[in-house]
Image 1 (cartoon, rainbow, N blue to C red):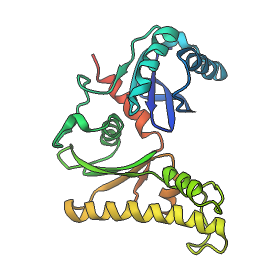
Image 2: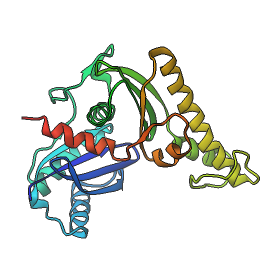
Image 3: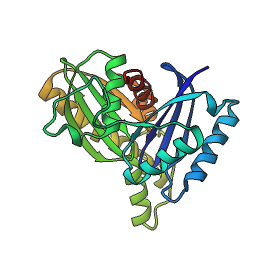
Image 4: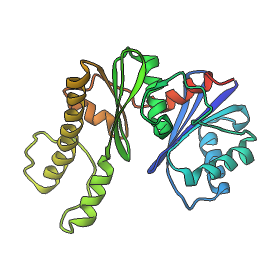
Length: 255
């Protein structure tokens, strides 16, 4: 079984997917670690394959999206040394099939490009694509399938970490839903603030986009997409693996 490996290298985590054509066979998420060596990443990748009774020798192509340039060379060497494959990084020269109509297309992050490609494959434009990652991005694709631009804001994890670091009396918490927006203890008040605060931010941005551009289908992905999607009035579809699926689609478009 010939397979392709895709990687989404983010500031906080690296998402890894294994595909046969566009069917996902396996997926993993590991912490982004600037200190890890080529061999450490290589051993980790091998262990992930072994846990799933998969063979690295069956991987024939690798497609990578990265917003962490300092790790790019490390990942290139991992792919070369442990898989004997030269990975393709999403960027100039890669065929995306996406019409990017921003002022400077080269500035558009590879993750945003990949998300737009995947969204267009699965949903009918116009589209608003929300990615809840280290940064929260909200991107607009018009009815002509053109990537027009979007919004970049600090992500929820950044806010949670900053509040814990700067407010010494507040505990570090996990994000879970509360029964009421009004928290009756400190932990629930914080959870409510994170959940409904970011919902308010995202929905405010989405609604303003709709006011400017007209109605659009809203697709959400990223670390907190599921819980936010459950409580949002504006998210139409939650697609947790949108970026990985987009990378698999892009791989099919390469020579």
